[in-house]
Each structure stands twice: as structure tokens, then as C-alpha cells.
Length: 249
Image (cartoon, rainbow, N blue to C red; front, top):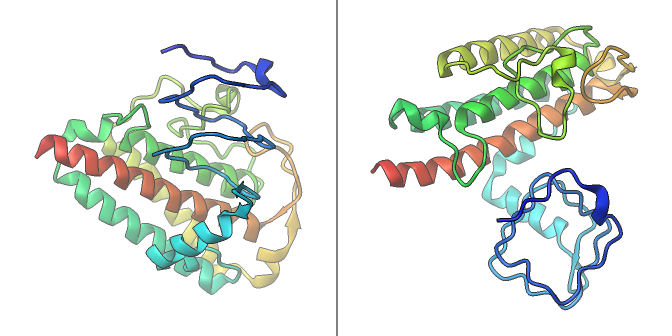
């Protein structure tokens, strides 16, 4: 399969009368793309999607409503108060505990196996550590060095080593879970005493090198990113576990 990696050459390009059947698009920016007369049969899309219109209908409100129907816990993951923030942490931990129980029934190697070139379960858990470090430690708490070396950023973050990420790290599942538990405990401690005023206070930007880029943000917005990301990655992990469970059955 031909691979095109980190090439901006296609911005504004036109693709006419060609086949992309079976193609994979990963971490690709399709903002503003216009598709006319396309065949999109059995496609599988996930990502940050807003304003997408299919045959004249904006689809995301429909998708969001269906996701809320299928996963009612999602409604608890847009918290705005200290109490609902604490509840959101409970939600994501319950979800991850269920996922980890499923994984524990598989051979140990399974947690380090990739399915369809996606992150393994171990890598996904490492990414959740990175996201907590980024959006709580860096963006909300404004810490100068919040990033744990085993955290795993998305592929578009290419300078992780500059703020402490060890690209050669290969931690065990136990080591990953220990670090993640520390991050959750740290977040719970903050939420146990935080006031509404503090959650709504605009802070930043954090000028220390890191991720996300420097900007003024409220803790509410930062923590909502964490909860949304956690939920999405549980879904990815469960999707891939279902395939692994069939393979090891």
C-alpha cells in the first residue's frame, strides 16, 4: 500500500475520477472538504466532526443523539460543577475497570497487540496518561513539568521529547496502571476541594513547553476534554478487545 505521510501537498487539491477504495486516513485534516457524487459504502469514520452535511443534512446532531441513547453515561461527561466533575471521574473509572476486567481474561500479550494498526490497549492507556498531564497538569494546573515519560501523545505531537516524553519507553501493564492511578488520585484530590469559582476562573496561558498550545482556558473546559477523550478511548479499546477475544477464543 502506498503511504503518504505528513505531506501538505494535497491542501486544496482536487481528486477526480479515481478510486480510494480500502484507503486508510489517520490523523488527516479534512476540514472544508467537499465530496460530490462519491460512493461511501461500508465506510468507518471516527474523529472530531462538526458541521458535516450528508445529502444536505447535518449529521452530527443525529449522531450525538444516538450515541447518548446507546451510551447514557455520556450525559454525565460534560460536567460544570465540582460535584458533577467528581461524578465524571467515577464514570470513566467504572468504564475502564470493565474494560480491564475483559482484558485480564486474555493472554498477557494481548494488551500489547495492535488491531488493524490501531494502538494496543497498553498504548491507549499510556495516551490517557498523556491527556491528563496535558489538559490537567499543563493547561489547568499550569505546572512547569507535568508530563510523565511513559505518556503517549498523538502522532501529530512530534516534539514530545522536548517536554519529557520517552519515545523508547516500553512499560509493563502494571507500570502503566500505577502511573494512571496516580494521575486519577491527583485529579480526585483537586476536585475534592475545588470551588465553582476556581473551576470557572480563566487561567493561563502556561508558557512552559508542552501540549496543548498556550492559551487562556478555564478548568471546566480543560477537564471536559479529559472526560471526552477517556470515553472515546474506552470505546476504541473495547472495539479492539472484541476482535482479540474472537482470536483467542
